[in-house]
Length: 384
Image (tube, rainbow, N blue to C red; front, side, top):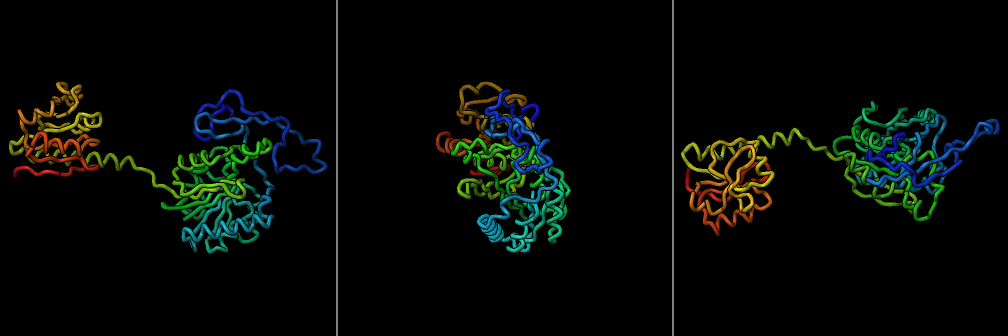
């Protein structure tokens, strides 16, 4: 945060904070003992809001409490009942009985126990040494460490994950969520909960800004963070009287550019095959469509045996396609200088062009159109 760059979208933040708070505790969980009072002091806190993604954040470094063992959630009967309901609903909704669930930032493991009671196999990762130790003493499988990209987590991949009030502590939310993503199965699901910044705004609670929380998520910014890092948000809402935001997500498979390259090569091969089936017998082939993506495809393909390019736009007629240098002609040319087959590559106007060929021009030859990454013959002319 030294360069005042948004933690989430890396957009440059304002040089001036939106809010500045003075003399606040260095950490909400740092409660000094009597002999520590002289060493205790307050700090100033600067709050910024990103003009690009909207995330509210503070200019501070993350805090780590080596002896922290958990939160007040574990000692509240009402919250424990709420957490139990969440655990059981997650397991039942996604059929996670006997499946592996990772809790990220599990503390001493009280929610892990609820997941196990619901029938799942729970595993945790936790930065606090003391919390890890206490959880292990109760027989829980907890690995000490931080979540992030390339994190070496025992038992990966997991069928699901949960993380409760942890993301707001992460100095790099993207790294945190990408680490979670990497440690899930291809269709892994998850439950993530953070404090609601809407509640802070609605109740004008300036005291909600603390050094422990580096990011302050709204429903909008939490959704953005999750989708940015590869998750499909199945549902997202505020709960616990509006205090929390809870989202249920599923891992999305990332698009493969390699597959896209293979698709282009396949399409060009099909187009060449179509052209050659006519040109090898002395038949003539034209193409309809000099759009930007059309001329790109023509340049990639480097066709040799077509007659001309047809386009309805008078601004394109009597010119040439870039790079491939095919002449662009008006549709009436199909009557005065006929061809035996035509490929329609103007994908946004396919139906309109095919109708024009059949009804206005009376084209009796073969018509083929682009269908995804292949060719589809929609009218068959004379045998070639």
